[in-house]
Every structure is written in C-alpha cells, then in structure tokens.
Length: 633
Image (cartoon, rainbow, N blue to C red; front, side, top):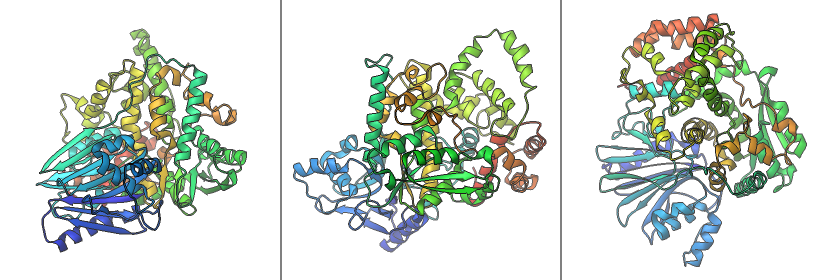
C-alpha cells in the first residue's frame, strides 16, 4: 500500500519540479513510510511513497520500463498478479522483480486499457506513456483506493490525498459553498466532487487519459443489474457464496509481511476468521478488536467468543467510550476532506493497535452493502407499508403519537428514529434512503445558512448525484436500486474513505474480501428478495454460514461500532461545541445563522430534541475548516 502523486505540464526548471514532487510526497508520507522516489520525464513528473508488502527488496517505484518508454506509480494490490505474470511470460515478456507493480506495468504495455479487465484487486495508479505523451490512470472497481485529480490552467495533477495539492503554485485550493452544503446533507462530499472547487475524485470502475491538454474519463466496469429470477436454488447460492468468499480470502493472504484480521464479533468479520481458519492454522491468525469500559458500548465479548471458538491469537485494547471523543480534533485535522462518520474514532484506534503487530489486515467492509446489513433496507420495505395506510391514520394518529416518544442520548433515540423514518418515507423513492442515512435536509439547511448556496426553489439539487445514480441504474425493482445507491455512495465515500484514511494514518493496509470482483458480481447479481426475506437482513449470508458460525453470532443484533455521539456533544465535547459552534466563530465565518446554531445546541443539551447527526456533522466541518484555512467561495 502506498501513496502516489504527480503532475504534467507544470513548467518550471527541473529543480523546481523536483521540489514540487517532494512536497507532494512529504504530505502523504504516512501512506508509505518505507521510502519514496520520483521520476522526471518532462512534461510528466511522478512521485511515490512506499509501504512495502510484496517484494520488499525490488518493488520500488516509480517503476520504469526503459525499452517500452512507460513508467508507473501504483497504490494497492493486484491479488491475481502471479496468474497475470504467467500469462505475460508465455507471450514473451520478461520480469526483473516479483512485484505486482511490474505485472501491472507489463499488462498495460501488452493490452493497453484492456489490462483493467484482468486485474482483481484494489488499486489506483497512473502510467506515463512517453511514446504518445499520454497519462493513463485508473481506479479499482469498488473504489477501495483513492485517486484525486485536477486540471487547472493546462496543468494536470493527481494524488492519493488532497493534502498533496497544498503549497503547489499551479493549484488553487478553494472550498466551495455548494460542496459544504452537500457535505452537511450527506456527511461527506459525494463522488465525483470534493470539498474543493475544480478538484475531483475519479469514479470507481473508471479510467482517465490526459493527452495534448485533453482530459477524458471512461467507465470500464459497473455493478451488474440484478436478475429477476435465478436458475439455482438457495442452497446452491449459499454454497457458491462460501466458495467465492473463501477464494477471495485466499487471494488476500499473499503478503511478505505479517497479516491479521479486524474482528468485531459481527457476522462479516467472524465469517472471514471462520473461512480463513480453513486456509491457515488458526494459531497463526492474529485478530484485533477495540473494547470499551462502558458495557452499553462494548462489543468485545463477541470478538473474544469468535477468537476462542477458532483459537486465534487475539489482541484487544479496552478504552473509555466517553473519553475517546477527545481524539476527534486530532483525527479530523488529519483528514484530507471532512467526513462525519463518528466511528472514525474507534477505527483510528483499532488501526493503531493493529499496526503494532501486523502490516496488513483483512476487514469485513462490503458485507452490509452486498447482503442488506443495514436497517435502511428493511426500512425501504416498511415504508411502502406505511404509505399504504389511510392518510387520516398517518396524519391524525401516528404523527401526534410520535411526539410522545422519548428523546434519548443512548445508542437509539426512539423519537429521532421514527421522525427520520417518516421524513424519508414521504420523500421521493430515489431520495428515501439518503434522507434516512444523512444529516441536514434541504429545508433544515436553508435555515442554517445565511445565504443558501443551492437553489431554494429546487432543494433536490442537493442530491443530484443520488438521483442520477438511482434513475440511470437499469434495475426494475426499487430495492435493487437501493443496493446500488449504498454501494456507489455510502460504501464508497463514507465507509471506504474512513477505513483508508484511518488505516493509512498508521501505515496499515486493509483488504476487503467481500469486495472481491467475483463475490460482488455474483451476490449483487442476485435479486433483492433473496438477500432479505420477511424483514430478515442478511438472510442469505446467515444461511450460507450456518455450518461455519454459531447461532449466537449469526443472529445477534447488528450494532457496528457503538458511538456515544449524543452524549459526547452534551458532556465531554461540550466545551469544544461551545467554542467551535459558538456565536463568535460562526459570525466570523459569515456562513451560517448563529441564532439557528445556538438554538440547535440548546435544544439538544436540554433533551428537547435530538440533533446528534446535525451537530456532529457541523462540528466536524468546523474542526476541518480550522485545520485547513483556505478561502470559501
């Protein structure tokens, strides 16, 4: 795992270009602490920071093929690189290293852009083809690895993180108010946009070319449209899932450095341990988890249960859930873009303790999105039932009763959940799940902003990426489209960003077997009714794993990282909230209505309303803006 950066057409002397690329690499040193390198081949300059995982001695980058006049910088892993190498050797290509980087480079030389169809892995890379003066860059199918790019005044630049663009004289960093508005709604800035004007994320499953000043992006892969009917039985599907997941885990065991597993005790991470134990002696498997002293937030007993069941070497660190919130300013200041997932705190801590023992860890990311692990999937089904009720029942009985539900700072606030459910249910079908999972609604944001940056006459402009994804996906079943949205937005810009940034802050590589191409294509191609049945989430995965995991794990309630966000905002983080969201700071920024912000804080602290998501999202933004003092337009 590594960090990559580069630019084309920047001009300047070689000394200046060398200084600029060194500045970019220094900004992402944490992604690759084992060394770095650069290659100047005017008008292109490539830079690389390395975290050594495969071929520790010879896999250094930028990697250059002098004969073909092609060079590359690569971040990620190609798990099937040995198969690709053997295929290329039969075609007469020679190799001087054992690295997947060289297999990638030779594949491009042999196949051009078609090389992407042969790769199974997580990757973001850039290749400079001196023969035709073209930059070719690509991102993996699901977007595990980040790739940012910009084209300003004829200069093209790219990097693994936005921080690499700082201090470059040919790049202008300006925070866009429209991007802030979308961040407040989504809790992240949805792809392809970023928080900065004219800087973009390459979409997953896409490649780009830059040649003669012209930038083009092309899609090379997308999730399959689910079948309406399948010709195999449920039992055959289950056998196929276990087989494919086992194969995906086996692929991800290739490493020249120590390897472990993030183990929460949930179904996804437990499945990885169970199937991994059939490939590796369990005594050689290292598992890692975070525990909390407060029992209501602690899931570590489930992780220990799984570890004891399979006999892994388990590492656990117990912390105070309440005190953990104190880490928020440090973590946010190191994020290259604001992202308001509160589980970033335990993910940061888990990555830290894991890196003490291993360099690579397997995680369960993607299982919830593939198999309907979130309550939002069942919510989509229940919403249709709710809308079928008589209007008078909904308006005159159910809604008034909601106001009698308690407001709580616990893991679940009943009134907050039900109000959110009804608000989303009454939204258009394409917007429903985003209202449930997001923070600010357009109406709420209009009250927040002094000058709302999006059209007040069409608040759905806030969610134009969501609408486009939903409407352009060719599935006929609306629930299949919900699966697509979660894969293309929530998983991509929320879950994977969190894991990538938190792990790479500690130079830890995290691999996701559930996001294996073969697993994804098979499971996503199944109709929704096979994956969720009678409101049972993860129905098919639970059935597939019934001979591999005990019922106590398979049928336990999904909780994820339990984060006392509402309590943090009231207690341990209250001074930070008062400072960052106080009248003086809000007035100085001239972005938001300080009276509206003050009212939210007062109602939340008094227990009159639950604004945990809104206040948390706003606090993260303020901390990020403080750590990244650039102009807002």
